[in-house]
Length: 181
Ligand SMILES: [Zn+2]
Ligand SMILES: [Zn+2]
Image (tube, rainbow, N blue to C red):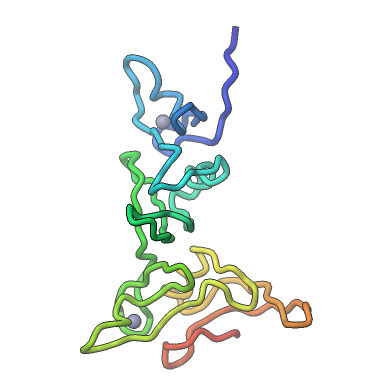
């Protein structure tokens, strides 16, 4: 008799099915006495419960931005979870390089911030708000702004009266502001 399993997605390491278990998510080839795969994702990461849909997205994209992780002291923080080639799950808050000063851009709860914002010798105020005009920026869009200086497509944003407009987001000529183009 075939046992019923909940398939969450495809294993990026071996191509097998990733199934939901009592402790999290596991590749079907990482079950039994001589497993050929190592993929095993805990249901709790950084004191945060993973949702099935988030694990499915992590398997597909390998890097996803999530809020609501908590430090031992109970302080909430966002980060980018990365599914590494060896199957480990890494927290990687750096999403790119600052267009203004070359520092690291890190994801914060309200903005993607330059790591040199408090640098006394060369402070940098570059930041990308995570919510612009009612649009919640994705990790990919923030990376595009850092790497190419502009999003590849127009984003849907909203005025105070609810009317919709679409603009690309890019870096100003002085590379300090985010502008709608
Ligand atoms: Zn696998
Ligand atoms: Zn900077």
